[in-house]
Length: 80
View 1: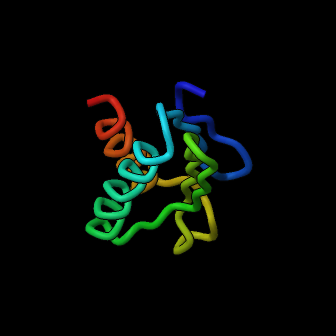
View 2: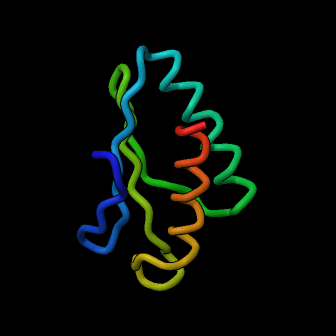
């Protein structure tokens, strides 16, 4: 999945890395950004893949600008 898909009131994207360490390093960076924004993703990790789902709990679990801002920040980490 190369772009964020909006499904079931969530932004969803899967990222693939060369190995587990690279995936975990990415997750650590996402965690720092998420904490700074006080906006935390649902996510899962299996070896070299990280799946992230975003929505805003405060508005009943819908996609908001807060999710889109975090998604853009995550894309910046992944792309460069």
